Image 1 (cartoon, helix red, strand yellow):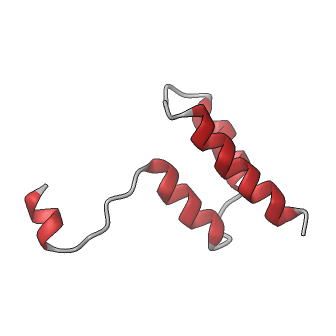
Image 2 (cartoon, rainbow, N blue to C red):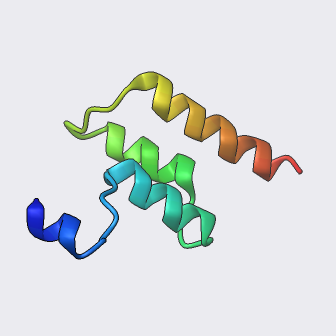
Length: 61
Protein backbone atom coordinates (compact mmCIF):
# COMPACT_ATOMS: atom_id res chain seq x y z
CA UNK A 1 0.00 0.00 0.00
CA UNK A 2 2.83 2.39 0.76
CA UNK A 3 4.30 1.87 -2.70
CA UNK A 4 0.97 2.69 -4.33
CA UNK A 5 0.57 5.85 -2.28
CA UNK A 6 4.12 6.95 -3.14
CA UNK A 7 3.43 6.60 -6.87
CA UNK A 8 0.20 8.66 -6.75
CA UNK A 9 -1.79 5.92 -8.45
CA UNK A 10 -5.46 6.47 -7.59
CA UNK A 11 -7.06 3.62 -5.68
CA UNK A 12 -10.51 2.76 -7.02
CA UNK A 13 -12.65 -0.31 -6.73
CA UNK A 14 -14.59 -2.42 -9.17
CA UNK A 15 -17.49 0.01 -9.35
CA UNK A 16 -15.08 2.89 -9.97
CA UNK A 17 -13.52 1.02 -12.87
CA UNK A 18 -16.93 0.20 -14.36
CA UNK A 19 -18.07 3.79 -13.85
CA UNK A 20 -15.01 5.12 -15.68
CA UNK A 21 -15.40 2.60 -18.52
CA UNK A 22 -19.08 3.47 -18.91
CA UNK A 23 -18.35 7.20 -18.92
CA UNK A 24 -15.90 6.57 -21.78
CA UNK A 25 -18.56 4.62 -23.68
CA UNK A 26 -16.71 1.32 -23.36
CA UNK A 27 -19.57 -0.58 -21.76
CA UNK A 28 -23.19 -0.34 -20.71
CA UNK A 29 -23.12 0.21 -16.96
CA UNK A 30 -26.52 -1.39 -16.26
CA UNK A 31 -25.59 -4.55 -18.20
CA UNK A 32 -22.24 -4.79 -16.45
CA UNK A 33 -23.87 -4.42 -13.01
CA UNK A 34 -26.48 -7.06 -13.86
CA UNK A 35 -23.73 -9.53 -14.76
CA UNK A 36 -21.63 -8.59 -11.75
CA UNK A 37 -24.45 -8.92 -9.24
CA UNK A 38 -25.15 -12.42 -10.58
CA UNK A 39 -21.79 -13.41 -9.07
CA UNK A 40 -20.68 -13.26 -5.45
CA UNK A 41 -19.76 -9.56 -5.80
CA UNK A 42 -20.91 -7.45 -2.87
CA UNK A 43 -21.37 -3.70 -2.72
CA UNK A 44 -23.68 -1.23 -1.08
CA UNK A 45 -27.08 -1.50 -2.76
CA UNK A 46 -27.46 2.26 -2.32
CA UNK A 47 -24.20 2.97 -4.11
CA UNK A 48 -25.12 0.67 -6.98
CA UNK A 49 -28.54 2.29 -7.26
CA UNK A 50 -27.03 5.79 -7.26
CA UNK A 51 -24.75 4.85 -10.14
CA UNK A 52 -27.57 3.13 -12.03
CA UNK A 53 -29.75 6.24 -11.58
CA UNK A 54 -26.92 8.42 -12.85
CA UNK A 55 -26.61 6.41 -16.06
CA UNK A 56 -30.35 6.10 -16.60
CA UNK A 57 -30.66 9.89 -16.37
CA UNK A 58 -27.85 10.33 -18.90
CA UNK A 59 -29.54 7.92 -21.31
CA UNK A 60 -32.85 9.77 -21.10
CA UNK A 61 -31.31 13.11 -22.16
